[in-house]
Length: 390
Image (cartoon, rainbow, N blue to C red; front, side, top):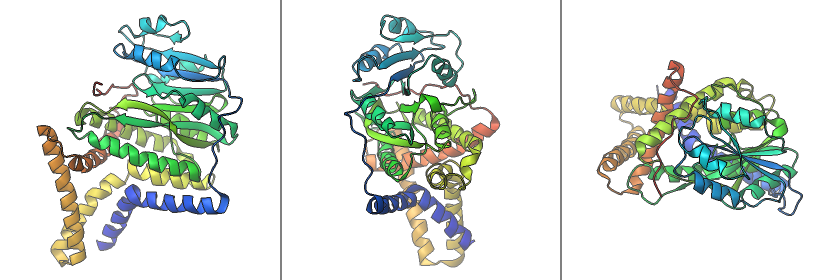
């Protein structure tokens, strides 16, 4: 029982903190041996590029998105703009159609985001494709900062940064911003060591020649598209200075809905990316993939429960002060999470408690997402989460 406890505790620690420590050490060693990776210059002949925006019933903010898109910097004659509004039943397509500089693709049928992307890709003939969501807004240099990396022939995809805007910390979504700051740090180190493990749909890009269509029922299309490129032996680069900003989820219920969907997509992706589960072909990518994604999306949330149960039983049997101390730490942490949940209901602002609450919600979402996936109840079509209003 004690051996199982320590193994489980180690995996939990490694998943959330240990990998970050190991990654930092490996990056430092790489810098000593090979020097720090140098980003390509912005003074170059940029490739042709298409910006693809998927929009579903975004009437309330599509005009702001259009203004943001038109203001993006890129060499004249090398940028195409393509908006896909399949399934939209509001005025989103009509508002886009007022702008002749934007190519609009619209179908009345709603077949899911990935089918809309596949349709769009048949119309794309540029060297690079950048994908972004309709409810996110890019900084003006985002396309230039992303495209410069394709001067390196080993690069197959580039992911931008997601930035969560928060004007109010009155609920547990305050933890969302903290989580993304930590994730961004890990992605920077992943990218410098070798490759990011997957791209976020808010802002990512691929070489058109490497793009592979994924199955129509794919839940995490952005992750799968980018990882299929990594599976071909190309690197996914992280460009933190190219960012997509969006407001945090309206409340923890909306954030949980989003996280459960991601978790269901995570287990689906793991089952479909079988080649990456062995270290033989791409050992470094395998190490990053298992450490950063697979453990989080499979065993670790269950092991957290197991660690608590085993810790409690061992304390009852032995009274060893080490186990008592660990149990005390767990009780304090989960107690803080419970307090965060109670305060969230009362709209009381104590941000320090919202972070453990958000952490527990994320891990609950993984378990719920796995259950939902194997029950076959997770649709590939997005169910939009409500976001805070500006």
